[in-house]
Image 1: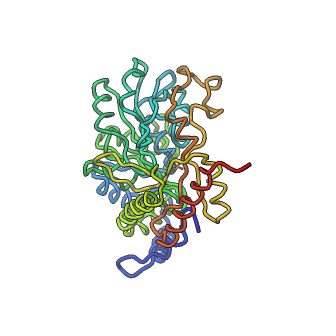
Image 2: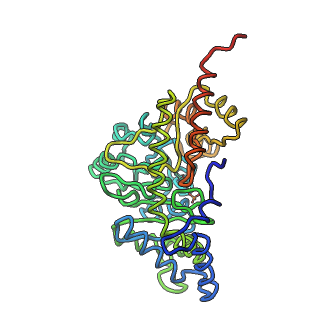
Image 3: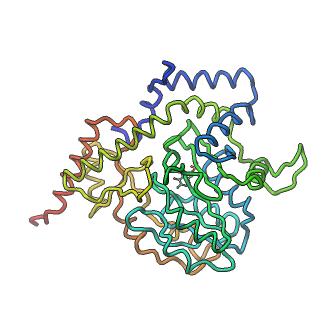
Length: 383
Ligand SMILES: *Cc1c(COP(=O)(O)O)cnc(C)c1O
């Protein structure tokens, strides 16, 4: 059994009869034939396709989800001395990009039910240095944007959704990445809409921000060899855009399958006595980038499952505020972070195998193994 089965993905058949592999091969051949490897026509096509899907005016396709966050922050003018409020319970990129710019990540604890930033704890940490808020739509469901946006509006702050794990999910009928000032996502292979390499994108309704993000991603170049902004080389490869376009026709089906598999997991785990399954905020759907449960003696359960041939992962064992690179002695520090709910979650979460092609039989095997191990662990040993 695989944690995420990307080989099975290539075998999926599209509506036109081609497999994903065949569609991707065709798309790659087209690029090799026209030879426009940098900002070729596939990049424009991908951007138009994804902007329409998310329901916003602008999409800028980029080299990675990390570049998308960096470029979004740069476009908002975040610089040394600024503060950006975010969650400590995420992948490194969310804080790393703030720190790269010399700004300070300020951490707010998470909601214990959704694992996403607790909007109720935002207001006390906002001050005159605060420039932006980066909520992460963790594990596949959007953070609480109605509440976060209302607070941001009151204080004149921008909101960047880190939607690396939530692309394809919805909140009150609107799609993730189109829920705030800027949405960012990642096309890393294991993400809900993954390519076969690195990629990412920014989304916005704001024409000026779109313009700035596009320029920054191309060395701040306004016209050939004339640079108006400090930028980066953050473009997506034409080849990667082509691969993503080859896979795109199957994406809606994958989102649907993810929803079904996530719901079936929860039903089966509850039936087996494991009740700490993911909970969706009202009005949200999830693409279950991770299907994550909470367990006592998590590390023991993980080891036992490994013995049974079931791969699992911990997202994430170390909070961002405790990462050596981000601790106070290495960067401007806002006084550490007191986030006990995130801390407790980091000690208890376990992500189970999850992908759109997970068979019913494999799912049953996982559920049975988890239930069995949890039961054994809860019986005090005779010794
Ligand atoms: C994967 C991920 C990123 C980074 O995306 P890359 O494309 O790997 O740079 C950022 N934030 C979150 C929450 C992620 O899961």
